[in-house]
Length: 265
Image (cartoon, rainbow, N blue to C red):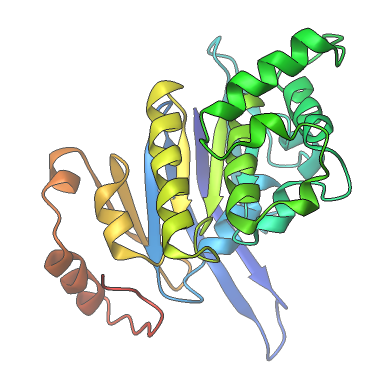
């Protein structure tokens, strides 16, 4: 579905501050994959996401996207706004995924239109009823607040809403960038449960960066560990299922990663 070939990115090249943030990354993401991504701070996780999303252009390498019809396209030079048509991204900050000064129904309409490219869709009573049905899945009583501006909602409500809207836009790939890290434990659990549910029901292709090792174990069919701009482990299938907290700790020890922010719980 998405293939990265020999992707490298260097900041401040040929200066004393040169930083090789990504080093010859080769990664094939298959349709339906749910990949958890772990690694210490500075390992290259956010840089990898920025390259995939089009926020950063790689210094070298190629990014290929294969659509549902099997047609492969080179998107290496595509701008971020173009990739946003098929790559969704949810950030750690719950406020970034929604427009706070716009109503809930207007936020949902914008994302829903993105999922139906080229079609003219009007916000009418039928559409509002559809939105209410979608919002009931969140179990947060938002279906009765379509006219309220989103900045009236809590962080947990906004992040759950962002996740729902991302799913409604029908992305080819959904990037989750520590999307529960800023939430309290109760809301984090709700959003993670919704993440699993949506991924399974809609056969989403997902990459999820997390510092929570329990989430890395419990979610997804594949786990990637990064260190110093490289993918040092890519574990899937039965090997992924068999992983334990102790085995992940051993993986960190083997590559001599020190990360005080890793949550071993």
